[in-house]
Image (cartoon, rainbow, N blue to C red):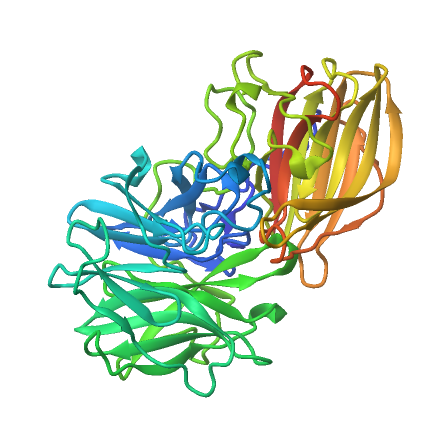
Length: 537
């Protein structure tokens, strides 16, 4: 995070236990920022500039709405502007019927702009060989419409050439030409494997992003040779048919975390270029780094003069967003619309939540019965952020039914929950640790291992729950506490070791507010606020 800007607009530890949004606000005289530019789960980035506006796509897979589009004026301060879709309906698994789409769904979306229109293309990874989605809009802030479905293009990059021909780069060096109207593959059009792997490419080679500069084509890919560090590579050619040559343009285990790799480059209005590449950082997920891109002999070389991701660098551009720059925010639920930063676990049950039934509160009804949080579709979440962050809720549990479970979680494949349960009218708060097992073929839930590490009976109907997370190197720890009055806090349970596991949920840990019925539906809880705070230390 940036030490020279206000990460915490106003630091509140009020009588309600409130905490503020981690908005990346520039101070008046701020001119630098600190990497990672977004210490949160923002994987598979694609970034474009249109005029003096920058737009970024990322991956959120099974979370809905999906396909987050972010907006910035300076490549440092970002806000969520829109989502490509509210829900996906190709399979009942998006509703947790007959399986799940944990770690699948929307992946690695390509973002492009051409002749007044924005385009976004992705292949849902839950159905290999199935159709890709192509969305379009004239203004990303006003929502998107589905233009067409296309063949399955893994980790694709849509590309409009200077002669108005249109291509999709995908897989490992594959390119196919589209019809001019983008409705399908062009019959007799270009359909090539651009290159064969050289002897050093013995592992992962994907994540296509394509840029054209000074008449040359540049294909950026993440490379992960077997038993070698991850790296960013670039393939270059004077024409699409080749020949293509390759160069390693970044190889750095920035700040002691795993190596940086997968992303793209973008220019500013002054002709300066920058690399936007993600880095795995354990339980918080895949964070975003921003670095210079300098051109050497026609090659885009990333990093500082030593080829490293800079810890601190100048903010690339001057520009201020009209709205608060933040991808995680506090929410007092005082408006009839949810903050743009909330996402549901799988397709939501929209009839099971409300911001109007009790003014100033989020009401979560129980919907489909569930045995545990991994089956609870009525779960709403936001990202966690590093290096440290805290999330607090105030919850009214007076209308819970027997068998209901509600609370706050550090949610991932290994989750920890502050759970209020209702049994015979008695409310009990416990710390539950849960680890899900998924069947790889359809991501069906095979089982969940759980244990309780702390428990206390509750007397009143108002409870305050808080999770403090530390994502510094070698930490990944969540600490849980509760309060009956919002002033005095009591730790409950053990310190919990958060984990990132690409074989299961494939996402960074998230603050999740949940309510589900294990017996009969009909109960509900009310959430007065979610307060968020981040800490730069």
